[in-house]
Length: 408
Image (tube, rainbow, N blue to C red):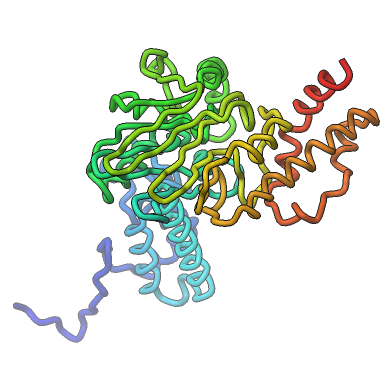
């Protein structure tokens, strides 16, 4: 092995390896933009306009967007930063290095959060009862509509799933996560109502030949309105185009529940009951006898204003007051945390009382929608999230319904 002479200069080994730079080459690099430098460092085959196009190293004919590069080539980005750290001070100052490192860390953090969002995290809140907690927020391109609670009840022989989620992608991930807790077959699926955040994952369970329960009227609305709503989700919120295929959903694969039925999961009895018109035209709930737990879907909201566009508000109030008639220790709402105190039902009840009084006042006094928004909010519901947007989404339809009822 030959040893270097004093006249020879060592250069640090970095990734990717680069030849020694002369002062002229350094000056040339300085002229180029930093995107050019990024591109050159990862081995670009083609540069255009001095700015540089980030290309797939495995396919020189395929361009990569800068976002793809940052998200999916994290190691390359880090390598670039490490390379910059070896450069002479006169090429790039420490302040710019700090900015670039901060930029990298920001996208690393963003990448981590997006990855976390794609995971389905289940919480075993009671023995054999698992919950995916949806966030109390509007559907968006990040959460992909996974904003409602989804529940699994595990018996000795089989599993019941309550609500399918907003897409087949979500349903597949939910089942995958569920398999970490139990390999027992999923025998039943309860669809509480037709809204996309609860029902659009149904296709996965149909393919698995799961026994599915839903209200008949809600099913008809799902088939009738579903394709249009799904197109809006794809167009406006960036949902996947293969979110759901309504052609794969047919009557013979569905069990329409008008009253109630009791199923046994193996030493675990669960009541499935249709409460009738409330939040929608037919809301299905479940009751686990082992833990004395109600699973109510959107009949109950905790911590946020209840969506009411498709509701019959007076009948909804009656359902809460009179039809949750079994003794319960716990209640899992459609949105929000599990509760064990009946006073917490007031999150939904007080909101509905406010809506009922507000719409009646608007009808009797001839107030416009804009005037309803100026009505004082009772202190009992000040803490609820999403009051304004929920009111705006549902008030027009309810105002028309109340006018027909009380005027026409």
